[in-house]
Image (cartoon, rainbow, N blue to C red; front, side, top):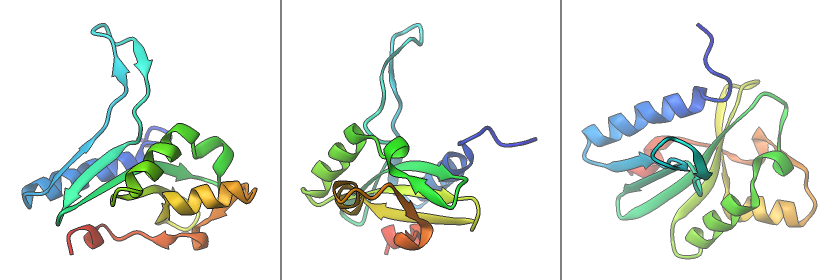
Length: 139
């Protein structure tokens, strides 16, 4: 059965959270705010938080089926501003993008994304970021 569109990376990250929990490391997925009936109120500020080795890692997970990740449609300003604010206080804050074409998970630091957008850059390619290795969070 085909994965639900845009959910492949999140399913992999959910497995990672389970593996980290087995090692005694806390991480969780943020959820949108909803009423008791499930009606949408407000989106989450970003997707994931992991606290490991004395550092908070916060990120939003995205998927890209094109050669480049479109900043205008994918780097939401509210999320970007929140990630940058957390980075200013020591968090490792970033966008995590799975590029289907090359099969790589790439990390784009929040400050780098903001800088690119301020310079008028419209999109980022996989080679513009760094290949993400989750092991880097746990040393």
